[in-house]
Image (tube, rainbow, N blue to C red):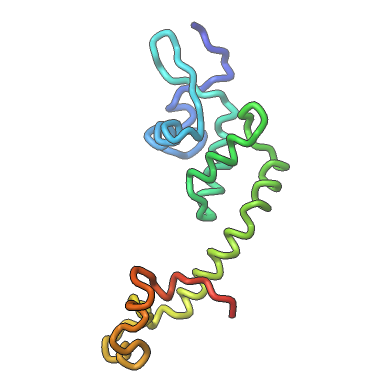
Length: 151
């Protein structure tokens, strides 16, 4: 089976995208990109996969899990490559989650001086803010820093 020139080898796509071939294979295993196979069972990627990879990298960069990215890509008609309009629509749908993460990270940054389970780095201070680990007794397995609070 001869593939059109519109397909790239993994090495060509890796060079064009700036990713390692192993990253391409990883994204393929995760269902984020697809390849076809030659008669010699070698992978070939459609050229527009580079745009899909750019989308994936941007979404990963803002902290989205690969599962969410895969769902977003699966929502596109016929599995097509995302357009600027798709990115705009999908990024709006992720906004609330990202705002929550930003609030959590801001809180973590602001409270970093006191951050073990009860909220501080000092066992002496814990006795003041959380005597006898009351918080841990009331909320086992929870971390006060990971709770999102409206300030």
